[in-house]
Length: 551
Ligand SMILES: Cc1cc2nc3c(=O)[nH]c(=O)nc-3n(C[C@H](O)[C@H](O)[C@H](O)COP(=O)(O)OP(=O)(O)OC[C@H]3O[C@@H](n4cnc5c(N)ncnc54)[C@H](O)[C@@H]3O)c2cc1C
Image 1 (tube, rainbow, N blue to C red):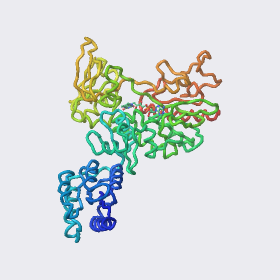
Image 2 (cartoon, rainbow, N blue to C red):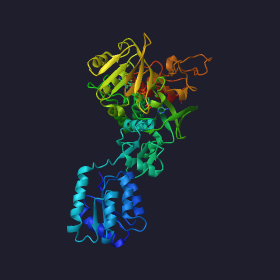
Image 3 (spheres, rainbow, N blue to C red):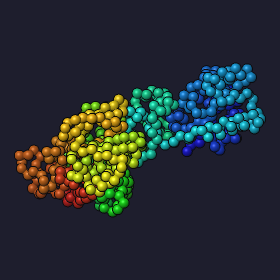
Image 4 (tube, helix red, strand yellow):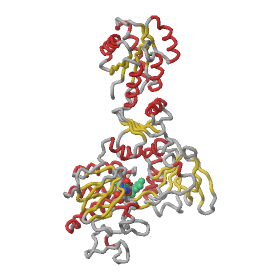
């Protein structure tokens, strides 16, 4: 924690020097003593301190200053630091100003000049005010702060980005914290929430994930001019490919748009992954895997890949910032994203009550409230169990007649044994309602078609999976659902525009473009499990080696 500040202001340099000396002598070891020679200079410095999240314990301000009186200055700083103690330095003739200051700006004390000897006339007063301040004020967090509105989807997205990347931050709801809103207003950025405030005093208004990644020192650019292997997507398959590629001597780069871990990273507890008898949280597994891949020399870039093209013998990735990465071979591990739920009312509530996936950052927000989970797969089951630890009641909304078809038995048993989870089968979501937050979920009975409304504060959706292949749809042969065809599944006939045409057989996991491989959930016919994705990702590296021998 940084030391709290005592801020003194006086336009007379001699007096200012004397105050500073006396303050330093007594309080220098526990407080930072800062000074300014005018109200304007002081205000500027105070704004910067607020921006850095530095606490100010006390203002000691001269009343008679040319541009701005002490009372006026205190009125201004009060908006940014409402809890600081405020002392006015006055001459005998200013007592009236001081008295009105008591009412106007909640003055804690007025000190008559001169204050010597300080041991009798200054320190006892300040000791008392400072101990009072210390007792009542919680020292602010001095790391990254994210200030936004709860009702803003972009705030949720940035919270998710920071926490998925395991970067500690403090969330400030500006609707609950007028002093931070005042600070943001002073940047002229009040319409551009959320704002990320950094400990060095700088800020970013409504940044993209990449802008934020760059600012916090995540790697966004490749260090090498050329790679043997580039991997698109940092889920379990991509991380495994990066780890095996780098450990086997390939110059390897992995590009991930959100956070290492992919879908698995959002799982509260993975219980069926080999070697973890008590289960492992997705974030823990992701952190370990990313560390391991980096240790072997793989570069992990925080960027989105927006294009992939072939310039034989090279494969080129285009990144969201316009830069490119060149390599010999690519492993595509972009996985799947949630199928969207198309019902009336949903769009404006995304990120403010309606979430795709586990949204673990939001769990505490819904503590003690009623929420629902939509879906019947293992991920929905895990989600229901996870939220049951925070919410008052969790309703699992299932379209099928039972959970048996799609959910593992161990999860069905756990759900049955959890008293605050209710399972409603043969129902579908018909609409959602709410103004600035989710209020009601309208469900429809699959048999009778009858609709009814449930009061729910949040809805977490875990339905189906859509392959993330938009970027390569014109380049690679896909199946009818958009998953990437590989190896023996590739069509051989010349009549298909993207058929396999080389004389040699495609390698296992190789797509219709030689040298581009696909592994994990994005691959047609894959098992949609963590262990399978890890197996395919690591297995693809053997095929890359075989391919490199042909280049
Ligand atoms: C909540 C939940 C719980 C689960 N629990 C289990 C479980 O207990 N056991 C189990 O075996 N399986 C579980 N699964 C399934 C398992 O997580 C997946 O099968 C596995 O994560 C697939 O790995 P993947 O690497 O193929 O793809 P993903 O995990 O989907 O990763 C793909 C990655 O690619 C990135 N990406 C996509 N496009 C781009 C682009 N253009 N540029 C850069 N990056 C991009 C994405 O951001 C993502 O990080 C669960 C899934 C979920 C959602």
